[in-house]
Image (cartoon, rainbow, N blue to C red; front, side):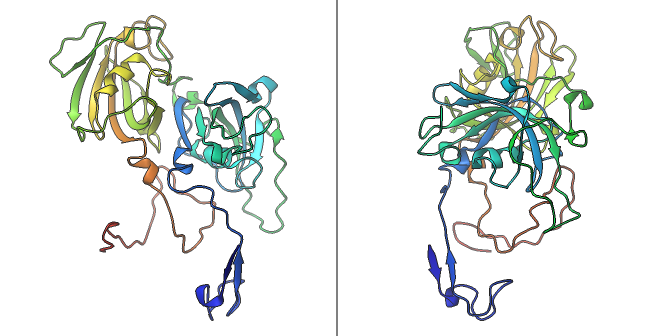
Length: 360
């Protein structure tokens, strides 16, 4: 409890319900510092794109499907899909743990991806039921439907419905990838091939069935490379080599694609081999033969035995950038509802400072 005298609070002016010269008590708990927890709450391995527009906000009600796993062992502890009904909860109303409550706000309507929740934002040091203490969690999560909070009432608004299994009501917002002409699945799916062929760098190398050719578009820092198990943030556009037809692109959405790099991360072999030699900031074309992509089975719009081209740029590795992008020292609360989305026009005031020197 922080017991704060008026002189160190809002003084003689007060603020809102805080009267003039009022001493204050704040019950504060530090949940995370820096990247110890919030920096490890992220979305990876997107399996199905959402609409890129409708993201859950404070007070909205969401309907999700998920399979929950203990990250360290892969043991499943819960599944809404096995129960046959989505799970409903109200965002920001303390109906679920912090990881799911804040993590679902990273999903757009219809998106299916892996939500990685550190133990501090899940069940913590105590654990719960089949979840051992201090366990990081992994959820195969899909934002099935969304009901926006009412804006025609305030104190007299009805309380949110309790969290739990529920059918999606007829008036809820829903989305299916076919509405954008996309397939039901996305790229991060392992190839049936177990080979780990050598990487060929440079546009002058001839393409064959056992190597990835990397054509650099712009250089990176030349010293920071993806390591096994690290989270990597990229933008990419995937196209068929035979005709240039684009079948997927993270650049259509409002945020980069995040993935956990390595052999066990569910990536096609072509991505693993191609990105291993790319450094932070680098942009390159990965020319991936079918054997290192989706092989004879294909996937969605990717036909059988199709060679692929991926225009990939590494935006951040680990905590090198995205983990340190954050908001602090809030001076004035917003409405908690209207967050800018893709294509919105915003008007802002700002004072800019060099962080290391404080120089404006």
